[in-house]
Image 1 (tube, rainbow, N blue to C red):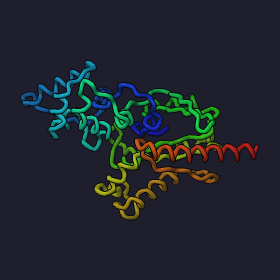
Image 2 (cartoon, one colour; image 1 turned 30 degrees about the vertical axis):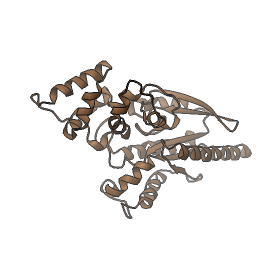
Image 3 (cartoon, one colour; image 1 turned 90 degrees about the horizontal axis):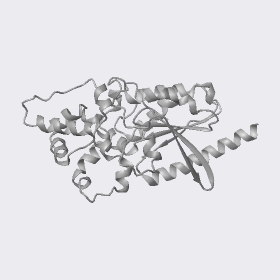
Image 4 (cartoon, rainbow, N blue to C red; image 1 turned 135 degrees about the vertical axis):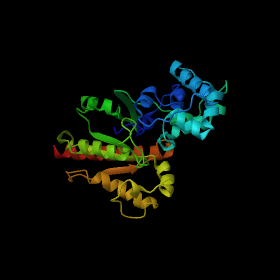
Length: 294
């Protein structure tokens, strides 16, 4: 679980569904909720192309050459998506940069295409899998504000909560209101979950995802601008990582259990394989402790 756009579904995704079209264009609902709009003059030589692309996305079709024309023009890109460039997810940029390949008639998705395809979790989705003959059931819940009231329907009998956070989004705001910092929203949700009496005996494991993007972002974007209480070098990765973990750890009132955490890159299969095995061991060890105490 976690706030919207935190990549839980990428971590779990084994389905090779045709998600690429939705990954190329932000949802109509997200655009409708956006408050920051940039208008293109009706007389602009590019306005007809923009209208054609928008009409196509609403009808469920798109034209490669028009999308490429818009994407290669920075001003038009900003206008057409109604988002600041940093608000676009990395998957949107990835697929638009690869339109030449994706637009081929014989196109077949690569592993990277599948991992970067995005589809928001709606409601509650269960995933059953086995790791070294041990069965696990993972419940993926939608992170958008409109989906959170459904969470408590699936908390009965759980042994662990994997809480997903996009570690690189300290300078970004929510799609829902365009004001709330995404990382602050994640911290607030985490505080609600971790201090709920229902989860006193539940292991909570914090996944600070998008490590690859965090590595690049700290080089140019100071976290101190958005979190003034940050102490340390804002361009030193280790300082930023330590601060992020401390921010979430401070939200916990019950200190009887440690806060397990991992920095992850969901699209790095080797990284996730290693982390999943570590998480499996943590879950089994905590469950064994609980059994011995009963």
